[in-house]
Image 1 (cartoon, helix red, strand yellow):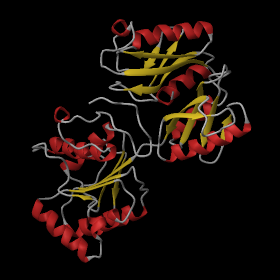
Image 2 (tube, rainbow, N blue to C red):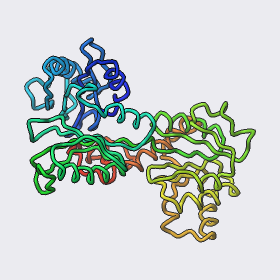
Image 3 (cartoon, rainbow, N blue to C red):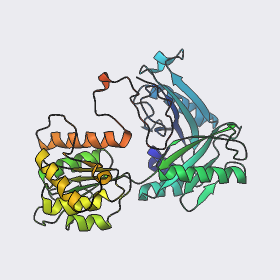
Image 4 (cartoon, rainbow, N blue to C red):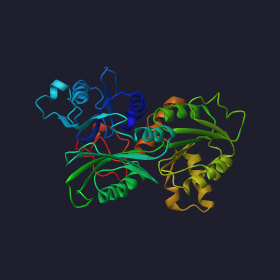
Length: 377
């Protein structure tokens, strides 16, 4: 639901009811990941997507039925179904959807959830989707509080503990627990959607390459910051796609910036007086990706300077330099694609090789999320 929460909350605030279909499980080459959602109003308005177009028509019709009956539904579409071709799921995958009617009366905490998503506060939604007659029971869980309930105090406590761990990693997945939260029981199926604020992309060096990468980072959903010590170059007018442009010595800015393991840091200055102190801070921090532009000779010299400052081999191994994948890029825009591709591969564990050359699964899991039940080769 979180992908359409803003619009659904507005509809509900206006006294309207929406049927929300959410992907809760996928198998094989399913086109969208768990948490993808589509919302339908009785007026016929629709937002979102659950399959990239494959089954939207069938889900739209089901949404209208749920609006009429008020009864939630758990449905599955896949190529093994008799109506697979009729609904258009020809990609070879299978998706399971939970479809429910959502209104302010049915979901009193909807406004609180939507406000947290809007402001970037980490929050998760846990919904009972199977195992009892009262499917649709839900909890909204923050790091420091929760509202709602799933049926018993013990179950709520177990779900809260598990969900907060999932929330720290931004994991969206299903939980299987007993009626009182027993972890070795699979009586109940609870779908958990986690929302974290956008990951951060810090770009150092106010260059044409930085401008291109800022646009690519924004497109990929990052909160983009461009930083350079030179005020004549570090201007908002030159970096319209950036969320902020900072004039400061890069290492000083990064030392006080918010950085976590979802953060990507790209150093595009290839000037030792900026790069070396900056990379010392970056490589000793928790960022999941650190890359630096430069020729192979520049990269080798930079490693020597960093090693002289006391960085360990393990810290230096984290540095991607020269930055980017081998795409044969020439222009700033092509180079931005190369760097963005490496960031994506690093995040999801991709090899960077052509998919046609591989026999492994296409869709990979984020760290800590468990199997996605995707066996595509």
